[in-house]
Amino acid sequence: MDPTGGYAGREFVAEFYDHIPLHRERQDVAFYVEAAQRSGGAVLELGCGTGRILLPIARAGIEITGLDLSESMLAVCRQKLSQESAGVQARCRLAYGDMREFDLGRRFQLVTTPFRSFQHLITIEEQASCLRRIHDHLEDGCALILEMFNPSLEFLVQQTLGVEWGDDPEFVLPDGRRVLRRNRIAARDLYQQVQNVELIYYLTHPDGRTQRLVHAFPMRYLFRFEAEHLLARCGFKIEDIYADFDKSPYGSKYPGELIFVARKT
Image (cartoon, rainbow, N blue to C red; front, side):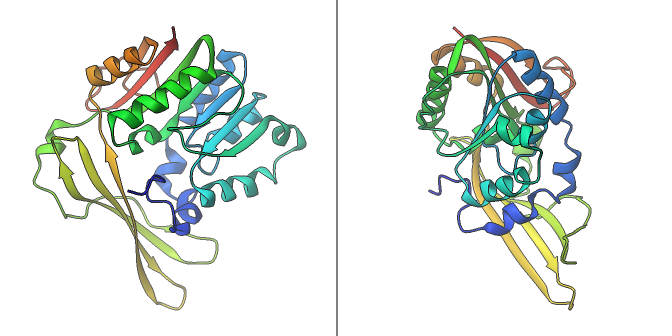
């Protein structure tokens, strides 16, 4: 199984990432910037990708380290970072590594897993290994923000396997290629709580030529109390659970997000 979440050998994912309307419009950046400022110290972001959240945190004056297992995503992040001010560049460190097993040789005041990066970990052993590494990298009493989607039971029981869906608008790349993205669940294991996800990109080149590219990866969903027990087993005490980035309490929106703020005990 590809440990990179399907990013290895698919450089087009990193190329397209920052142009996708869903990513540009996602209302999570301010939430993470505020949390970083409130932490009062250095931040570690696991699955930093192209720096969509990492760079705004650095611009806000916070030291931040980004870890990712995709060289292509890190390459885009490095290129974007090179265009930032000297101060922002000085506050950022990028590291290639696996969130299941990493050792950065220091501790942080906040660790985050934005945009569901934790859900690329498929087994309980992988999840627990990641949380223990996070625990080791946190200063005593400091917090982890663990972000996942809240599973929709209605969606899970729908007979939609193999059906493409989505209403993302078309976007245009700098070279003129037009891209339409759709989604598909290729397989679903209800016992292991794993879905094989496909993000499908339909490209139209300026000369009219068309192309279909697929980013395929497994993703595991966790339910609230399952995640609570996992966090407790790995040395965390839950402080807050949010349904959205506006800090709506869990249960106020369905399905909403599943965002834990948990402190190292």
